[in-house]
Amino acid sequence: MSDIEQDRWSRVKGRLRSTVGEDIYSSWFARMDLESVHGESVRLSVPTRFLKSWIQAHYAERVLACWQAELPDVHRIDLLVRSAMRCAAPVKEVAATDPRRLEHSDGRASAELKTVATAPASANHDALGGSPLDPRLTFASFVTGRSNTLAHAAARQVAEGRRGDSVMFNPLYIHAGVGLGKTHLLQAVTWAGNAGTERKVLYLTAEKFMYGFVAALKTQTALAFKEALRGIDVLVIDDLQFLQGKSTQAEFCHTLNALIDAGRQVVIAADRPPSDLESLDDRVRSRLAGGLVVEMGSLGEELRLGILRSRMDAARAHHASFDVPEPVLDYLAKAITHNGRDLEGAINRLLAHSKLNAQPVTLEMAEREVRDLIRPQEPRRIKIEDIQRVVARQYNVSRSDLLSSRRTANVVRPRQVAMYLAKTLTLRSLPEIGRRFGGRDHTTVLHAVRKIEALVSKDATLSDEVELLKRQLQE
Image 1: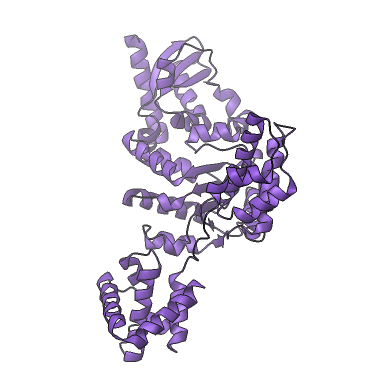
Image 2: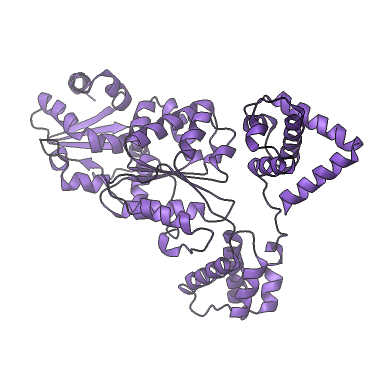
């Protein structure tokens, strides 16, 4: 680059800085470089696709105006990603941005700008750092049943919403165990939402959110990252239970509040309800619980059969001769009870065996091929609320008594028993148990557990009471 071009670029940056302000300039333009000037075209580069996408969509006209103040003949800005541009072979100017066609002088977005902003979901995700989407996970392929009807209906309501509509429930929080369809629903919302031309829907796993935030901090584009997320119409976050780190959680909390306060939709999935997300800040848990919290229960036999038929039909689209007899489907629906992924795995195994060995699917083959997928029934997951309710009923006290600061004998013993059962029958930590018992310290819980352990070994009556309570909770 010649000295003349370098001086001209310095003046353009100065104009841009005074136009947008120091904060915005530092966030969006500080790392923009001039590559070349050719006639009517100026070639600029930025280090990330994220910056490129945002500048193209929001600041193209201002960048052009600053250049035209120096060079009136400039009518085109080509914005490229630096790493890709310098490592790859030269290509035609596929990333060209002509602000004259992107935005009218009065600031209204033209049809071409709308096309950029509402590109196909995969492209939109790529530019904004979204997580990959599976094209199979749509509403059309989602099988509904008694355990997931409400979650499905709520997700459809979100997906079919339009920009400017009042948000019925925010956030929508879906929780369920592994393989019960949470991710399928969230990706279906994203596909359906991005199929229209009105709203921008972004799907992120909690891990991708953390990665994006940390990467933005490293590249000094944290403000840009925040602004981009808060410009999304529907933010979809999967596997929230994996969100870690105080700074990341704080940023998630701020983003959540900003989106909800602005009337934007947030959809979240996790493997447990908000109250059980011990690693999250109390403010985040409270905000999550303030929306619609929906549990997707275990798959009933009828629903499992429906999933098997759906997966078999999908396999037939590529292997027309593949067939699973009805008795085999019935057997699989009765025997494989854990989750939907095991059901899909069973169909895949039968398809592979049938095609590779040129043999029809039989009941004997199915029993042999899927035996490792037949797992013992999981014990019922016991909640601390269940323990408090059963113990309160057994000792003729109220649940509020167990959570209160009362120290009378008729309340202290039931409270200690309930804490002991919470420690032995759940996976909750001592601090979490203390929090769920009126905000007590974990040392109080530890004292109660040790107290009941010692008494049970000596007091036969108390031992019988505790065993009775365990049986009631596990039934």
